[in-house]
Image (cartoon, rainbow, N blue to C red; front, top):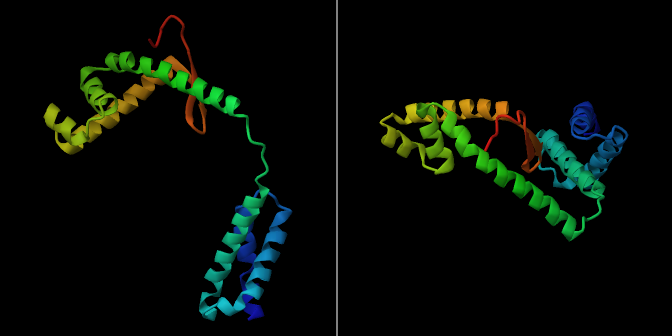
Length: 178
């Protein structure tokens, strides 16, 4: 059985190393995997499932490693609220920019985009309203999004974080997004 375990050692090392940013901890985690496997060997149903069983133990050990590594100080409530408010303000201001930019698109793009994105209309309804097939409406909405994105990127620079757009600035002051 030990020979079987050794066969998987290199693959397990690679598996762990790809999922962790601490090179020094790879051997420690691998050692933990083998200790846990030794202790729980009685739970292994068949030798044929050894590889999958070892990978499951390795996965769980990695999760334990990351759980114990999470050291952070909780932010004060007022600081968190301020950050959320500034993002909400930026999104509200940006939302005011969208309609005029959509209106600048040619009508064949502005109408389906307005119906899909601003009014939340399902694409089948857009197809029915515009006299298009469903696939035609989907293509039109998709092309509209591409055209709109090009216009938006020509107008503004964006600040993006893990929650989405957190701020923006107008590129050309002569051309307002409003």
